[in-house]
Image: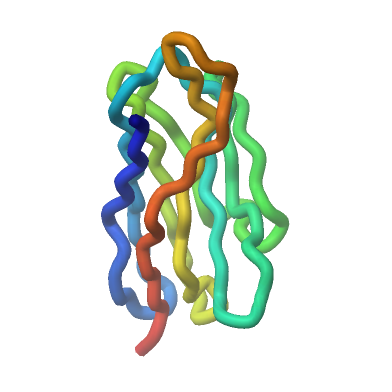
Length: 120
């Protein structure tokens, strides 16, 4: 059984900063790419950022230069530092990770989501 647990969401004013965390736990043999997506009602889930096990990161166009993704492989945790937040960043943020168990192939797991609201 594998779980991804997110934390760090909340209410922040425009221009402010917030850091999200997502920790993986359970029967984990190895973790490949980890990432963050976000979704607002009525829209498809979109990629915010992802990062490989080697540390190579990629970002969605709307967050480049403002968000930074990082990971701590020893803690099986991925982070998303968000700066210069805008009201349009308001969404439910989900982390995901490609995880292989002791006898399984890689499978994509998702967290439960954490709400980020940017408003004055």
